[in-house]
Amino acid sequence: MRIYKIILMSLLTILILMMLIGFFSIFQVSEEYYFILFFILFAGIGIVVSLLSFLYHIKSFHYYRKSKSPKTTGKLATFLSVSSIICGIYYFLFAVLATLGKLSSSEELLVRDIILIIVIALFGVLTILEVVITQKQIKKLLSTYKAKESIETIGDF
Image: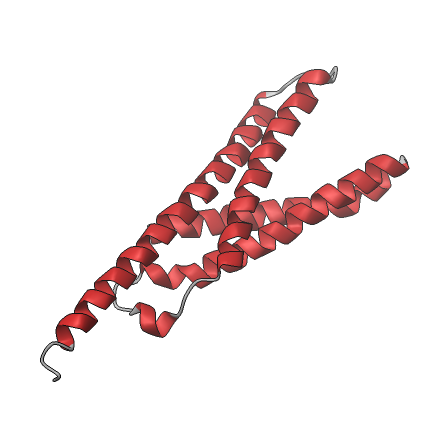
């Protein structure tokens, strides 16, 4: 499961870099004010939720080690979990909008475009799935820890 998280973090890093490159290159390509404003807003939201999702992956990485007790690791912030889910939804919607944009334009849909769109959509779905799995892992660790703690306190009267 840890390798899954590492792959997601690597893909997220690539997507953040692509968004930053697109963010700065849009000023050279288009001079339409509304398009630039929409793109800045859309890319800005994407960059923020991506960075929060990356932080979530870093913070939740240690929950996959069985030697750490939840008492020493603390609780994972709900805000980061929600932002990671929003990041997954964002990239899935990004893939859907990119597909619709390509289909509505006169440009031909190339195989590399299809592969990129599928990878981005799959990343969005897998990010949401990873958050759900991590939350289940945290609950399992907490219940195991509480059971061990209650067994150890039985003889402490």
